[in-house]
Image (cartoon, rainbow, N blue to C red; front, side, top):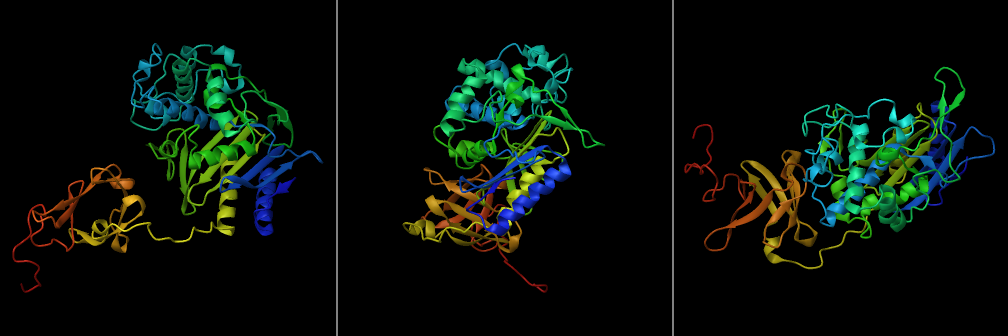
Length: 458
């Protein structure tokens, strides 16, 4: 029942403790550990337990289930960044003989390969992994459930394939690559494939009576990359900080940003799936992370990049306690009670008069937009009145800009000049932006009526 949080106000700490106390009671979990990180460090941790006088803490291991998939995705992105694979490569190129070699690495990462959700019976999470010694035993006779690339369909066999891909390319076991390439560099020394004391035991709680049944903790064998890991709240906050900022020893900031960019939409609600990360929207903010469960355990990890806050919830019950929901609520408690203090406004280090001349109001047809200069010669296009498509643009050495988000992601913005060097218009993916709506003399597709604007009697 411990709780620490020197960085948070006492009222915030109490609200966090109250939330996990209610969650443990209502979810009837034998124990629960939670932690909140802020700006890369632990700001609070707390625990509840049914055992009087003996509480777990942020260094107690719980099984984290499918949060393991995010670690596997990091290993795959490392291979890509080293030039050993391409995300568009068919699996067959690096892991021949699976029978599903036409699916791509990218499709496996974002669960759009069309593979089935589970391995064939018996239930893989509650039986020894040596019952499925080969990939053929994981995929079964009917591995495909949907046409490849047509929809998001969560697949544990898909991440089993990715773990085998890592082993094939690296030439070492998945566990060895994980330890050497992620866990040791990030200081996650309490994250392991097998439980290391102190660790919680897994329990099932009877749905209609307050009694418990011990759950087996099976080694998942070849399916380990889909859900094997044990970890602690403290270690998962370290991982959350890495997923926010990147770490050049493991994966760059641009690559972790790629992981948390939606690559496949999910059918339920305003959510999506990136490359090994779930993305959800709610309470006016976007969270990324992952949920996890295995018999005896549930887990949730969420991060809000904008507020630089992360939350972890780990519990040792098969069902009943919504760990992911509680983690999101803990994050929201901190964000709403103690919003992040923004950095001071500072002017740009230097002025580029040519770029400065591009700022101000532009029109796409009759829709007005503003264009403002940002850092590193970037531009921000914003619709006036909130109607229309806006985007941030990053400067490229060839004098153009590339869109970073939403409709204009990947689209090119360029300045089109007249013969005398003055600006005629902006071209954004063939859309013409002029200083005045349908500006006379500008290169507007279809031309501009020579009679100009007119009233009702014109």
